[in-house]
Length: 212
Image 1 (tube, rainbow, N blue to C red):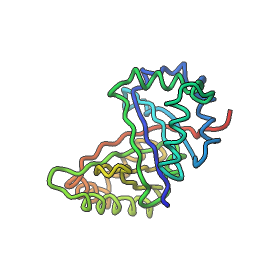
Image 2: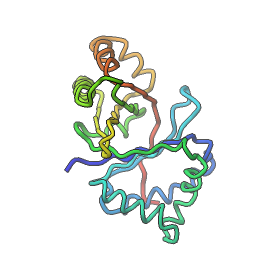
Image 3: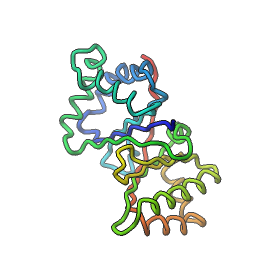
Image 4: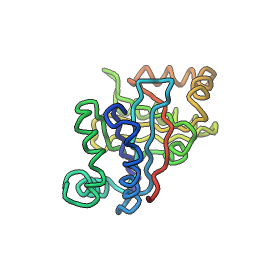
């Protein structure tokens, strides 16, 4: 079974940089969760502001991720949930600015891209009139070219089957990414991809979660 990526983001103003240390202990609990593979958190790069905060975790299955979510964010009386309270409060304040989704990995490995100095996070949906299969095909083509040229990339599709895709790519910096894609074969690939997909991307500096 392919790994599942849980992607969550909201404006950092809803949690506050000063509260990051209090969240580290909670993040460490993820490493003890059944089915957890790796998880990361971090901020959008400063040059892209306003900054968002990102939480990205990788699980053996969607059901095991949801089991942990039930323990940590739904049943508020558990010890784990109490450690996650600052995050729960931030999510509540963020309201409709909180976005989260689950994706099945189709091809590639997300961890190298998440461990890179800068991680490109791409959300893709089909353009009106474009088929799911065409977008999937174009996304996989982009992933393959990036990966074969030394830019670790993973492509994933929505668990919910709603036509949304996620791509994770590792770079040295956002500038490294933007300068690289000014050249072929990336110019042509991007043009083909944008003909069928609505593409939104951002860059983040992520830290792997460790036991506290």
